[in-house]
Amino acid sequence: MKDEEITTAEDLFRAAVEDVEPLRHNGTEPYRRRRPPHPLPQPVLEDEARADGLSEAEVETAEYLLFVRPGIQKRVVQELQRGHIPVDLELDLHGITVTFARDLLDQFLADCRRRRARCVLIIHGKGYGSDDQQPVLKRKVNYWLRLREEVLAFCSATRRQGGTGAVYALLRNPMKRTPRSAHR
Image (cartoon, rainbow, N blue to C red; front, side):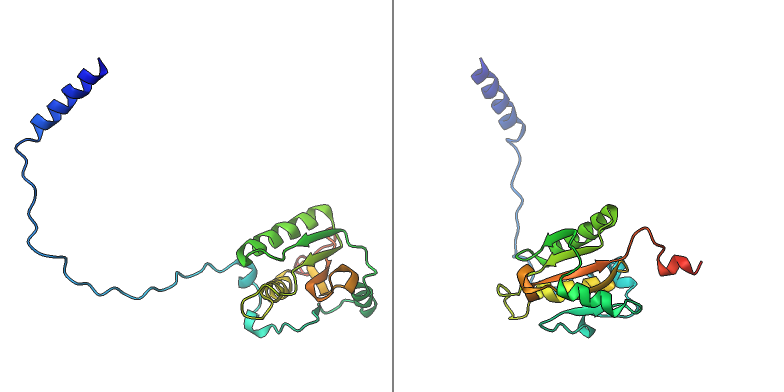
C-alpha cells in the first residue's frame, strides 16, 4: 500500500513540474579579487584591561621565575622559594592549549579564593613540546599571574616539585580587605 502512495505522490510531482524549463546561464561568474584575510579583533579581557599598561612583551621570562609585589616581606619570599610554605592546591597545565590554560587558571584561582588557599603550585611545564623553543605556557603563566591582584608573589618551584617547570604562587588572604577597598 505504501508503494502505491509513493507512486501516486511521485506522479503528482512529475505532473506539477512537467512544463518547467531549466534556467539558462550564458556566462561564467565574473572574476572577483578576494580580499586578504584579516584576523578578527580579540576582546580585551578584564585582567588585561586593568594591567596598568603592562604588556606581555614587557614581561621578561627567564629560566627561574620570581615576582614579588611591593610590601611583601623578604622572609616570606625566602620561605616560598625554599618550598617551606605548605601547598594547599595544585594545577597541572602542561600539555594543553593556551586558551584552555587561561580558562583553567581563572577557574583555579576562583576556586582557591573560595577554599581560602594561601599557597598553590601551578605546573606549566618546561616547554619541551613547544614549536618555537620558547616555553609558551611558562611565558603566559608568568604574565597572567602578574595581572592577578590576588597573587602577592610567585617563584619557580623547588626541584622536588617541578623546578623551573612549575611555580609556587602566594595568594592574598580573601578574608582581608584589598588595597583598593582599604582606601574607600
